[in-house]
Length: 325
Image (cartoon, rainbow, N blue to C red):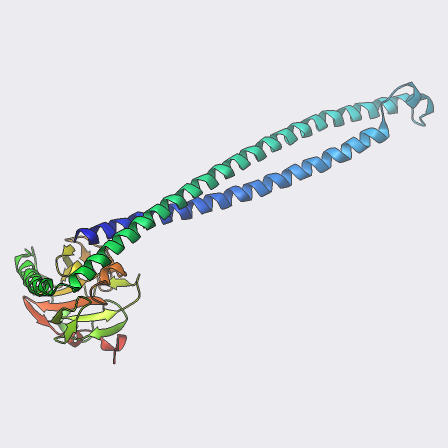
């Protein structure tokens, strides 16, 4: 149990890091866009200054020689001089804009370098977290290998599985429901309920199964194989009466559909709902994952009336499922 909990916590950390890395990449793209714009502004200022310098060189200063050999009158030359003076003032403002643009460019570059450094740190942190997760996963695999070699532990595990089933039954009996649903919509929907996931039914009700530890048992529900990351959904409206880790079952969600009808979904990677939460049909309640199915393959799903297990395939819309050969 401790290893399972540690694996789930590590995966949560990785999810947070990946979200932060995505946000960081978006910030870097924004800074690059700003940098491109500043570089364009800089080039425009440089082109303007180059043209003005060429004009200064061609026109020269206004002095005695210009007046003596010019075809224009003195008032015209003075007027031209005033206009030329205004151009100089304008050029000063252009030069200031140029300096501001350079400063803005430098700030954008500094910001980009900082954002890239932060992203590298996030990547380094993610690598360390993944290494920890791999170590924990290997620890669990080693433990499972050790268990497979010990026949006595197999017998003990069989006893534990039986106790787990009894524990689930006891838990259902102990649940205190404030109010039962008024209608009997769950019962009237028999044979039409949407499956918790779309996938392949690999274990049917009351069929004998052998898990990866070599333990043989009779299934009280069905197992549906679906890809990691698939959303697990409520098969009907109701209230969540349990959402957490259940020994022998792993992460488990139990939904009370009224009149003592319950649906149980287990061997799930992450739980998305809380106890006492109201759900509607096809509400996302959990997510499937690889680590949750190390010992048994597929999502495990039961339907119970009080403490009696029922064949889920009598209740589900089987046209939405496929069956293994």
